[in-house]
Image (tube, one colour):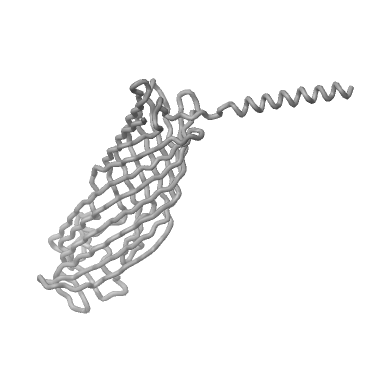
Length: 343
């Protein structure tokens, strides 16, 4: 009886070991690639972007406000820079690691944008936004007849990813990634106001005030996300991407206001600097169409992709306004066309 029990135990252990071995050999999520034959496992990407960059919180004047005695409110509007569409680019380089289908990928994004906006009020029924402390300062700006604002952006970012692509089904692939996001940016705002009544140190006269804001920022943080492809016809698929980042950012903000009367050299009435560091959240989304092909007996792989990109940098602005916090979301959106070559 004891011999039979021992024999049964040996059989069960043998079967368990064979099942475990088979399970270890099975690939639960086989890697997607794309892979080429006899290649060096490198791939490059080049993207053309046509985006609109928008910085909230840059209102510089309000019209339609009855601030001149004897006048009434007329039709007016809130004035801020007009944010245009601008071309830019992305360039990337990746490598497939010799372990379980993992890859590393670095991508650089470049975008410059600028715009100018103007507002006029012949009778002076315009309010200049953010020029003085109305309850703390004797400096006052009234009866503004013209105003203008020029905004300039220099945006740079590098995304460093460690990822792995795999199949979720026969027609659905997905790639998860994690890594770091780096950025260095500069925004400048030049506001100019012409007014009939500018009071500086209890002296009232007409003249112009120029206000210059500069925001330099750099930062780094953790970035996580994924991109998927749903294949609906041969090598054609619907492409998606989502990524979230928490960036530590170091800000250097300055503001300098200068008053000038009748061509005089002018005087500085505000000269402020603010250095802060904080953590901000960034969200990235993409939806588009993707196609891919292999060439030269599968030694080369080419992919083309086009779609709509969105990025939201929450509460990114740290501009120095005199009666508000100066915060505002920074966003970018637009067309992205991408080419990828594996070799």
